Length: 152
Image (cartoon, rainbow, N blue to C red):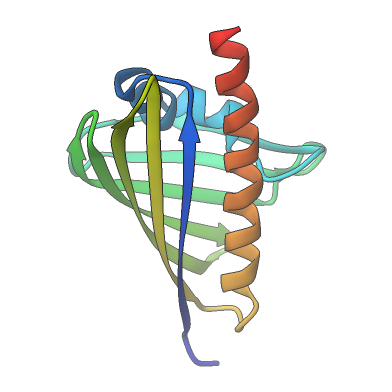
């Protein structure tokens, strides 16, 4: 099977200052509260080493049987402006995809604008690009809801 690739960008505006948004985006436990892509899905932190070169590991998937291990490696941390990291999604004994994710945060009126750029390399078929995009859109919708609660 060949490696399939794709790329997408998503932009959202949040009612949080860049510092507060940065914390929600980069704190490993906070990501677990908004980054699970759907109802009944979980993202549980196993290890966290938030520094350039650091590795974080989450288990994710259905709450009753999280079947994926996600390894996040940090390459750039320039808070509260931008970050770059890879996420490798493993299932069983092997990787099924790796993404390169870049966050860019800019101040906007009383809040922040977030641009998320994602490059996908799938080792499990051509549908992964759409699946990752749908997952990120769901995660950002969760993040919008969380941000609204934080300012209420």
